[in-house]
Image 1 (cartoon, chains in turn yellow, green):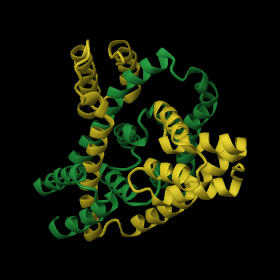
Image 2 (cartoon, chains in turn purple, blue; image 1 turned 60 degrees about the horizontal axis):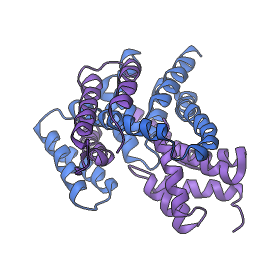
Image 3 (spheres, chains in turn orange, cyan; image 1 turned 45 degrees about the horizontal axis):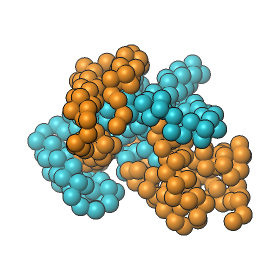
Image 4 (cartoon, chains in turn red, brown; image 1 turned 90 degrees about the horizontal axis):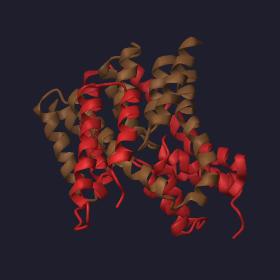
Length: 185
Length: 171
């Protein structure tokens, strides 16, 4: 296989981005592994693990890593631009419409309906992300591990969601604590 | 000018704390825009709803916040500020990653951060639901959505669209 060119990198990530409503990662797999065959399954899983490990937008990190692998710094930039250019233009267009019509009661009601659905979708995302935490296995130390990760989860939720504490001190305290207490399987 | 720098610095810091992606730092972003008097809660929720309903990555809420704060230059500043620092980190760490693929410390850190990520995304859902749902019908819609996405394969964009219709009809 010849290495993808810069326009191909741009177009691949643009295609992923424009299909992504509420989560781009499944589309990334379809485009990069199934359709264009730039990455094998294992390579994709490996890159994905790195992107989810690092802070920042997962799909943004993925575009940089994939772009860099095939086209160096220019490739990373091409992939990133492909991901962002059109969606940013669309969202600015919607922002302009919102500035003009946001006060219309009809639109305000529609947006609150959309926000209510979005909250449900995010709750589902939390449940899916946490799947490794709820799985019950009969392994030694499982109950301690479960107790530790549940405590850390609740502490984060209460600190940020209920008490509305600033994120930096919360992370500075809870991240080291959690790494210390929650032992991997 | 100073507003743009303030925007860039705050959002870059959020990018570096966003373990789990953009959705993990929504509570902090909402806190930030209120504390800076950039917009009220209702506007933030509206922008979040727009960003969720539009095609593209979840990070577009940052573009919209930047737009609201400082127009087109704000939109571009906020987008780059959220992506660039963590992107540079990915770029650098990507090289070292292969060598430490199954390093025990990497696995420990990953396992330790997961409960925090789940806690943060749960907080996002909670804060969003609390501020968006003025009455019982909103909470029913949120609960209904959660049930539907758990047990069906309907695309999220269809649910968002139906949510908009429901809001217009019932609200």
